[in-house]
Length: 297
Image (cartoon, rainbow, N blue to C red; front, side, top):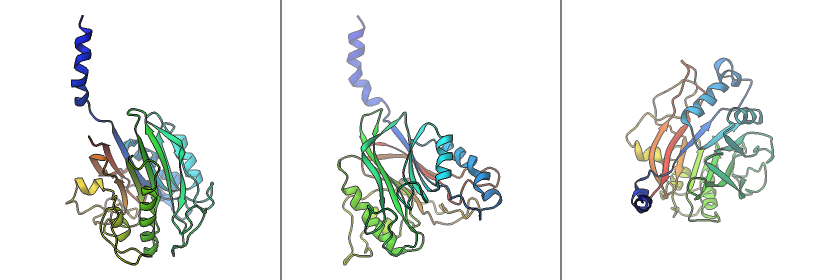
């Protein structure tokens, strides 16, 4: 006799249930190279990289500078995640990945939407670089479906050039165009990456909706569908926010070049720079950045 009463309470209780949160992180893990000696060597720090990822516990993780052997190591140590991406040199398995790691029990990848495009005037041509950058740069993306809510979202992960400012500005424009061109424009967006640029750089500022003049353009412009920066929304007064740590640990300065950006669909619950160390040992020459988000009501 009590069952009808319980069912009648469900519409009242549903709005009180917490929204389904997602944790998002970006992490430049530093490519494996013989020039990195001691604790900087990949074999010395690789388990600390995994430890750092597990500490953040992301549902969505974008990694940069991951070479094939590093990708295989991460995949083996993170069996709860699906890996997705290609090597930037040939669109297969040569060169660095800007890859996605997606928690399998939480999110399902849409096989019809996703891929990699090159940050160049010929974005579908593997290995292309046409904007003055000496290094090939890419963005990997996928449409995902949240198994808890059944709702879709788009996840992009990128690594911009470290030297060419025109390349970074052109990359900002191309990223905006690709996001605008997604098949389901009403679905939310998450963008992670090592932008090699702070929030004041025109390439990043354009993505944040500021009116700027970009390379290859004739007049200043403003993107009509800007993203937001969770870290700056929650910590506007934090001055020491370096993410490129130069292997020195937590150092003062405001050069935050690794970002998690989100569309207006999201409510930001938390955002932080993950300063996880083992004594004086750091997992990479970049600190990862993370945020907890939930779909806005």
